[in-house]
Length: 124
Image (tube, rainbow, N blue to C red; front, side, top):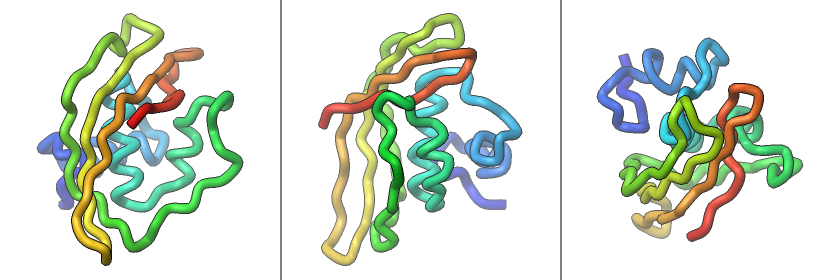
């Protein structure tokens, strides 16, 4: 059993793996953010594209194979509950690469359409 990259404390199969496989859907903006981080960590660009709002989604996505994502800190959330249609998640994600360790800080916007949470965009 592998621990989920989003650091929820659950195994990957019981957490983000269920979302990546399509067996479950994110119930909140934060859960979608966590699953997207995990998709970067496990190298799943198809899930990243599928969970990206069509208005801002790129035509294709190539992940950097040399960048290993290992930690996600959720700093703040606003909205994004199962009873809302918009949400914001501020986070810092940490990685290692051949050039050394680094992090990405972002404030991400999410919308819920037809019952599905989608990533819209983020500011760094």
